[in-house]
Length: 151
Image 1 (cartoon, rainbow, N blue to C red):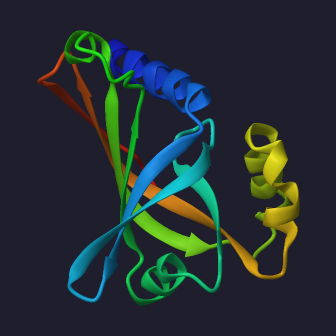
Image 2 (image 1 turned 135 degrees about the horizontal axis):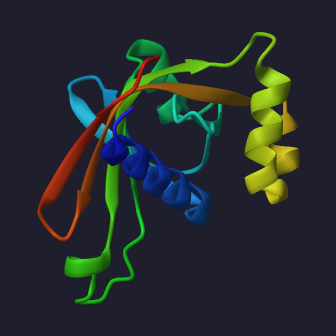
């Protein structure tokens, strides 16, 4: 693994630990549909975890098309963001977690979002993991880097 890739992974892990929310885009028929979601990421960066109620447009969209895009950033809404902000787009496929991984992934999610325990354990909620295919990282306003992930 190259030093650049190691540094990029370190940057992603730090960003993901520091941010609670991400903007996730799904496909609703022929249009994009965005939601704000609370998320957690696995340490190997291969999966991003989130929860949703089953009775939502987001859930229906994911059942009909699992492809998603997620934007995670650390902007402060100041001019300095042009120099200092980091924005990451994660592309991948989302699937509802129903197997032996559910306890492990739910625990990982709740370490970060302990206030959502009742929500996550509700029978009306579903836990999803995004199997990330690649990350696009933008820093210093226009510096773009790509990290391909083995899914």
